[in-house]
Image 1 (cartoon, rainbow, N blue to C red):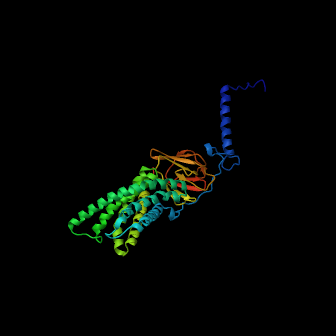
Image 2: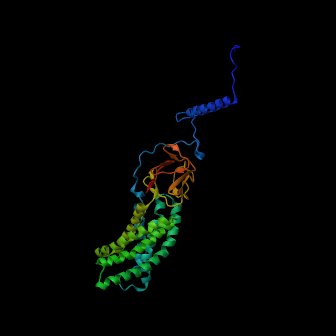
Image 3: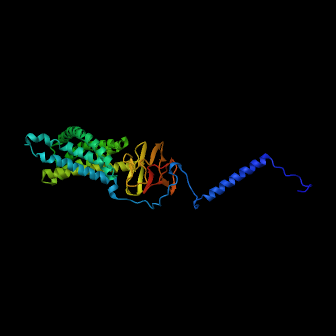
Length: 360
């Protein structure tokens, strides 16, 4: 350095600014070096780090009709009602001369109601392959269904006779007349209430109970109004009862599924995986998802899924997702977040589409 040049002066402020610039440039370089195409890219999201993103599940599939709630509840009600009828029919005696075994015939309606309740309560668990839930719900349903069957049978009998008495005030009525059918329809609506109550209690949800009761009343009413016209067309008493009660169970289950589906607010639709086409209606404040049969949404036969893999919690008008294992959205691991309408979640080989009745 020549004597004519002034010495270079560097202050502490200059050093601080230099350090900040170097750190910022280093952060940018590190982000570029660990970008999506870099081999050193490692993303950290809580406890789902180092997971390999699943392949894109593709478009949403409609799935099998067997996984529609109106179908499997209808089938369960149909089979349950037939089982209840078949259990008592051998002891049922037609006509006024019933003898000492008349009390066995009085078990017909309670038996049909109890087995219809049993079928509807365990149907969803059977579809989801959760045999543990099916056993628990089945035991609970049968314990409730039998006493409810007797109670509602007694009340329905009083209501039925009362309505027939009112209808007969305008003249004699017969089972071939619509007023007779209407009386049975209203009375049998009470049997549907019992099926809905058991369905909701087994599902541990007050809202599910409400939807079940509404659907059960509607379906049982339809079954009641069809019972006498069917019986009038058949010459056999036992056959007419079999067909009539089967229609009662079928219509009750189908109506419960349709009402529940029509009034739902939030749900997960399985777009891909073993349960493609199944919808899980989110009733509870907290819904758990995982490989354990104790979870609200049981995902079977996938070792990559943890026992409790994620949870969904209602927070105000929204739903909060908390991953405990790898959960992907758009191919990227998801942090805890509020879900939006039409978000797609991937858990193992399952893909879910989150939907809301009134999107925010």
